[in-house]
Length: 329
Ligand code: TXA
Ligand code: MG
Image 1 (cartoon, rainbow, N blue to C red):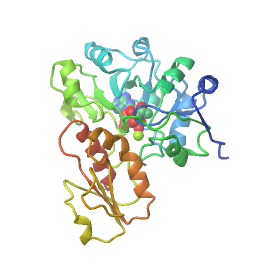
Image 2: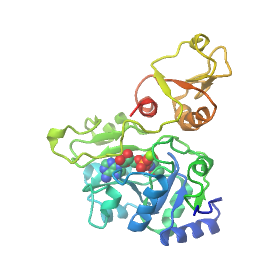
Image 3: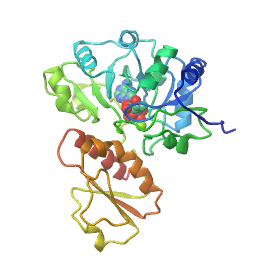
Image 4: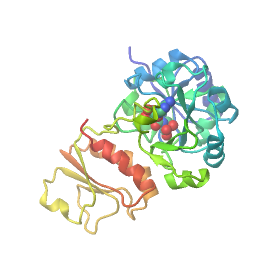
């Protein structure tokens, strides 16, 4: 039986209702500053199971646990000096820390890994909800597994209507890309597992050491983390091809039913050519990326051509999402 899905505005009355729903083990789709999440009580295995089921997500892909107070870190994980520095610098914000877990965190949340992913989000409505229920909330992005992450309440409804009861509408997400994930299991060897709004340079500056990127080499003998960081992800149904640069007018020699996604506005606009931001501002580009990919995916095109962002930092995060969207498996 499909569930009746309702979208709520963030009034005090609605927030207190939704906090009670979470305490009862129900799921609530919530706004965050990165993307919308599908939240459930991280300490309730039935709620966590319901998250995997609603998304159609394999249980081998662990969940991020969201908190509102630093005291919760100590209850769920084993912090270290590096995690304390990064939390002080960037929380609340788009940063997820991987730390050794405590026994209170169920294996279902971490997919059997001995480490847990923690994040203190910044969106004011989600923070009020977290405080209201005073529970750690497990929340993956609120999309069907493998599809493009949602950055509005309408995106969540499009993917999960009938599968979740409650959607809290907090407006469009400010950043538009998922949090930067930093593995701190070996505090002296910090590693970015997923590039995001916070860059390697920003993290390295706070820690005062180099920050590695990509998966840890197998000879370090650590359990393979982030099994969910699959190559193919964030994928539109329409085939997507990425290009280092798309020169002005490249579309003239191609069929008109192919779409072109540029960083900034072309000199001569065309109906099948779109831009992430008229001036090519990377923050705005990141904010618009997923919404525009969804729009192009339902535009009846046979192919989407997307241009990679120049430089590093936020460009790395945008390009990571585009490359995964283009990956074949
Ligand atoms: O911005 C975000 O991080 C959003 C919002 C909702 O907070 N959440 C999000 O969750 O992007 P999700 O589930 O779509 O991506 C979480 C990633 C997964 O690829 C998963 O493999 C990794 O985090 N992860 C979760 N727990 C982990 C753990 N214990 N060790 C390593 N990686 C983990
Ligand atoms: Mg996701």
